[in-house]
Image 1 (spheres, rainbow, N blue to C red):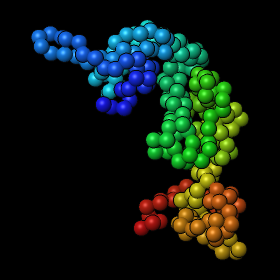
Image 2: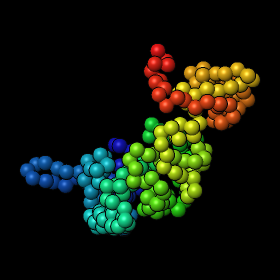
Image 3: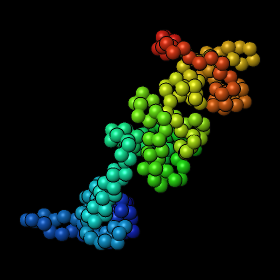
Image 4: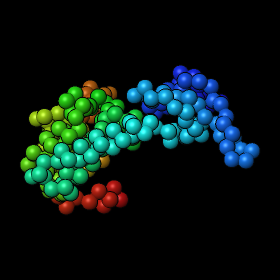
Length: 229
């Protein structure tokens, strides 16, 4: 038996209370069930196949409460913020949470994996996070993207701005395509720099190297494909 379907096990908001049992359905067919308790203390039998597939999430009353809560959150949109802008900002907020808290996200290593998080107040209230982003200059400009001023800092008030691609490039931890670096009088291209073992060669991290040694930003017309051949 699937080990998540065991007495005392948890599947979404359901706790398994008893071993699976079968109930006769139409004809000579049987359907397997488990007695379960929802987080709201409601107890009912839940189909075993829905538990195994994790399609069974919670009782109907809890689903209705969740739907009402989602509707309430949508209604929290400030009237001064157009619906399309609010939806875009909310998508950005959700993306931040995935990068910071979901180890399966392909960007987790560069965010949550290196300690970047979201301040406690915003972890508890995504609406407050979204409203803060809406209050920053440039929030309605789709050509700007969210940038942390201190690249090693968290998503928190005072550390966020809307920035252009070039502004974000200057704020990156990693060697920026097209940029130049100078070490002991020797100028290195971004291509040379990105292959270095920073701790061994310079006694510093890659992020520290970029801040300390960059002397020239990339040309706005720089083409990475041309540079790498």
